Amino acid sequence: MNSIGKQVLNALKGEINEIDYQRYIKQLTYDESESKSNLAIYRAPNALIANWVRTKFADKIAHLFEIKTNIKPTVSILIQSTSAATPSAVSNPTMQTNTERPSGSLLNPSYTFQNFVVGDSNNFAFIAAKNVSEKPGVVYNPLFIYGGVGLGKTHLMQSVGNVMLSQGKTVIYTSVEQFLNDFTRHLSNRTMDRFKDKYRKCDLLLIDDIQFLSNKNQIQEEFFHTFDALRNENKQIIITSDKPPKKIGGLEERLKSRFESGLVADIQPPELETKIEIIKKKCEINRVKLDREVINYVATIIENNTREIEGILSKLNAYSQLMGVDITIEFARNVLKEQMAEKRSNITTDLIMDTVAKELNIKPSEIRSKSRNSNIVYARRIAIYLSRSLTPNSMPQLAQYFGMKDHTAVSHTMKKIQELMKNDEDFRMKIEELSNKVSIATPE
Ligand code: ADP
Ligand code: MG
Image (cartoon, rainbow, N blue to C red; front, side, top):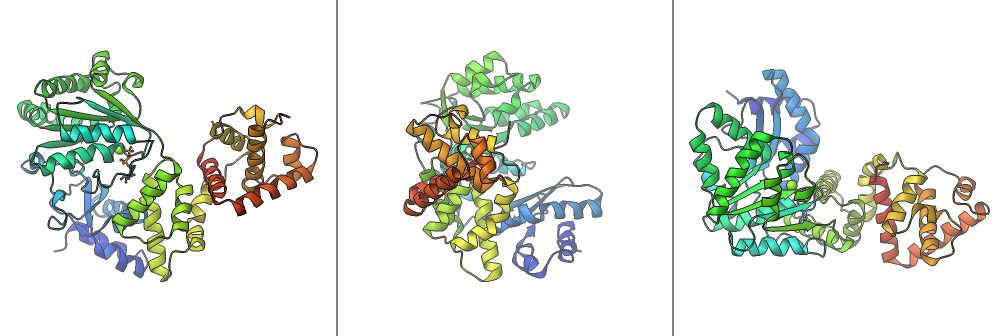
């Protein structure tokens, strides 16, 4: 008899086109031993296929499960761990002996220091994490890393985990939610000893996205004791959050001060150059070939959230395989057009002004003023250019909005910017980056 996971894929075959089925779905294997009624785990041979299935088919798969079992599971597409090829892909030793290993607790074997691109934006956190991996429990304990979504916090903390795992140390990677679930389960099973054993006897505890502790009092209490027990034994703790300890609301003071007692390191959004290097790295890891122009273009599309990169790469790669063509810049623009168009539908001149002003460190009101200060003139020209390219406003409308004489002034500005873009590659990229920033910005 076919497993339920297989039956679902067979059913999916009837709903999607043959090429998608052959190229992606057929490559999946259902992980029967790890799956549960509310969690369906499939393994894909590589990150590209995994990403593609995740974005395109995961919902359909969940839906088909629901039809067959009446339960809609979370569908998780993980990458097959071929332990021979990637020795570090072994799962956490403590967890391995533990039959209830939650699938999310595995470290991602590609989250290593070697695969992490260092730039001004993340240098400090990188060095801190590197030091901790060399002297765990000694230099900074805890290490607290904070920053926005997709800036590499999980990657960095797991890099330390992978180093220590390869030395045979016991590493636990967990989210607040998993910690809480584990706690509740052991509490109701009256097996708190095992809970304490597990979390207080590891060499390295990684807690991701600690901001979710906010307002959860009971688990804060438990975490506090876990924290102290580990630190008294000089066991390393690494914590990530979207904000610094002080700014996490609904958190006990004693926890805040514990979090600040080691080293607090922030990660800032990457500069354009760092983004480009990250894309190159991801291409290398996923074996995608992109030329310089396409890489630069992709760098301008993604805003700060580097998480988008893998999605974009798999999209480009999948389309190009499907159509049997190389990924040229025209091709990339075309494939990613929809993505940009969606983001662009809500753009207003106000939004453009705010974004440009913020980016160039001036006040939005200055853009519309009569000032001849060169910075302001520069910002004004860019704002006009972007407004004309990204909004449906006519030249006379823009002339009025920006307080210019008439539409010829607008037209003149457009020509100036276009000329600059043609002659100056850096400037063109800046403008593309800005226009993508505007597209992604949400009005307040
Ligand atoms: P966060 O936890 O801060 O939300 P992640 O660690 O999940 O972000 O990073 C999102 C994605 O971006 C991952 O695929 C990660 O490998 C990648 N990434 C982020 N920063 C870097 C970097 N500096 N070098 C290489 N990859 C990075
Ligand atoms: Mg994260």
